[in-house]
Length: 151
Image (tube, rainbow, N blue to C red; front, side):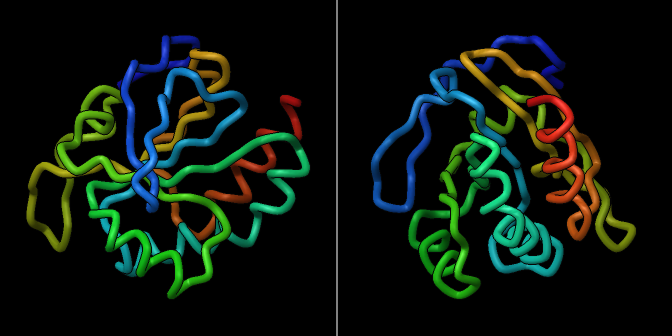
């Protein structure tokens, strides 16, 4: 797992429109990794970030959600829940692995490998904060509180 003040991995991901973004060049950005579009926990987390996004933006920060889902899936998910931030596609899980947001998970008693619900605050190529094992419903508020305390 990447820790605070580690370098952001030099990886590019795609937006819903197919444009690429270099993660290590981002300024004041929240990157949250989530397992799958339009599933209960991931939808709760995305909608929570949607609801806090105006306050987060006013604080000078951006949000990007990252999952292995396709750009088409992201587009449907964004429209269905009126998300007001971009989702990035990590189809080969390169970013999730590089950030340490991929590993052993448990769902309904079954253990498997997958994306770990993890969030990173990054700025100018450095990781400023890491949230692991987040609770989808409360996480956006937790991130916003951190931003207020550290801005």
